[in-house]
Amino acid sequence: MRLLLRVALVLLTALPAAAQQGPLRIEITEGVIEPLPIAIPTFTAETPAAEAWARDITRLVAQDLIGTGLFREIPQDAFISRPGFDAPVQYADWKAINAQGLVTGAVSLDGDRLTVKFRLYDVFAEQPLGEGLQFGASTATWRRVAHKVADQVYSRITGEGGYFDSRVAFVEETGPKDARLKRLAVMDYDGANVSYLTDASSIVLAPRFSPDGNRLIYTSYATGFPQIYEMNLQTYAARPLGEQPGTMTFAPRFAPDGRRIVFSLSQGGNTDIYSLDLGTGERRRLTEAPSIETAPSFSPDGSQIVFESDRSGTQQLYVMPVGGGEPRRISFGAGRYGTPVWSPRGDYIAFTKQNAGRFHIGVMRTDGSEERLLTASFLDEGPTWAPNGRVLMFTRETSGAGGQPALFSVDISGRNLKQVPTQGPASDPSWSPLLP
Amino acid sequence: MQFRTITFLAAATLALAACTNPDRFGRGGADGALGGGYGAGGVPGSASDPASPAYFQQTIGDRVLFAVDQSTLSPGARSTLDQQANWLNNNPEYTAVIEGHADEQGTREYNLALGARRASSVQEYLVSRGVSPNRLRTVSFGKERPIEVCSTEACYSQNRRAVTVVAAGLIG
Image 1 (cartoon, chains in turn green, yellow):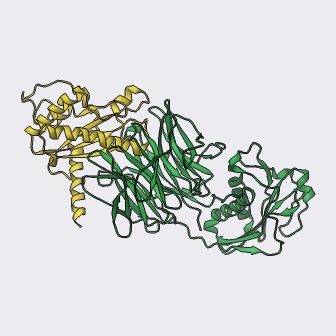
Image 2 (cartoon, chains in turn green, cyan):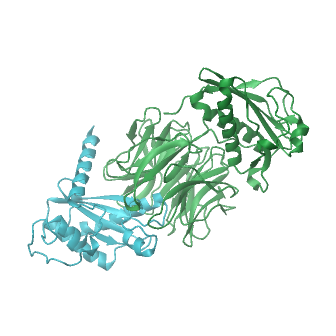
């Protein structure tokens, strides 16, 4: 299913090693007021047939970077010089138009094989930022090459990991609100390359990527009752997990090692959290309370689980050791808290909050302190972390008879709220890890 | 292999349920009110035939409603369920799947758990009125299958429901 990409990562050795900490730097957590001006001249086509590819790849690199809200692209018609990829950079020409960053690149095509080289320059420091790099790939995977270039640029300037070369699993929705049809789908993080994994014959909910990105776990009503399944993304084969007649299972999430999952099981009206070893099938009950325990999420070191429970009377967030044991409540603000998701960096927990008739996506420290709400609407829910732990994607649904869900993303600073393009209504996003 | 067979039966039961209750998510049940007296006979299979699923669905009423974020049964709900239990006791060839539902004001997975609670409340009550637990199964649809689509309390109150879907034959 996933496009095979053979990325040859070759350091271009012509340039001296650059300073690691230049003035060209964006701190994402502080919230950027003024986007950084960056020049991205159309990459040089080294062979005539590469011209269209060079144009498309340059546009996609720019689109990735501008889409973060952290950069402002300087229009190409403002450029004073148009450098060849290997010619010395005329820094004065770029300073004059106030470009702080400069991305140059070159593309060649041999058969269906693309080779893409790029360099990043800190204009005001008059030096390259990091090494030049070269990626090789087939034309079918050209978008991934562009995303990899953009990830490098983003990463060098922000000091954070990239997230453009990643996938998103989600639920595509069609039909009226009282008879919705749902299909599992995956797409690139920017909405391109959609493929559908199930037909619309049963309700499917809340997919989650495995840590290696090769499998999905999700809930399906294929038997008429909600049960959790695992799907292999290479073969599309799906198998039920932990099936037990008379029970409902849902809310599955992978452990960081990919070998175990945690999920909710309802029996006799009571919902608790269980773990399942995917290899041995061994199941363990982690919570034992008459209240609702669901929406579990592992800490990235695998030692703790954050989940929601209404044991206090309303939905709140709790953290417990991975083997079960006494949970510690971490949410104490007004309203109800649900769907906690531990950041892949381990520094924050994202959640859905309901208060005074509105829904919010928020983040808090893992001990519950420093709560910040990032969004507000009629219905926002179910955040998922970008691989770098600095951006969240979630479902936003509009109200009323014609109400429909869509995917949105927002920085953890609360900036750059925007809709993620999908062909139709979509819900329940799950962000993959960064692709290899 | 064993569970495959069971799964198939469950699916078959549901398909049958979909047949006998044309609107299996329960549209139009609650407004059936009190037409057709119990035991009055009537057109076989119609809502006036006390032995028909249509009677169960429309005349008795196949659903009960719940307060916000609650799963306790109101006196009115218990009265409806008393009649449902009578019908099930008088028509032992039928089994039932009890569907628990929630309104859209909640997160998806919490609402699944809440729907499970509501379905279970109904199941426990029917069992307490003599219906064999072997004839009842519960399922939660959370907020996935609203019956009313507006985003005000008028609709939400109808969506916070548990619907008893009867079908002839085995249960999964």
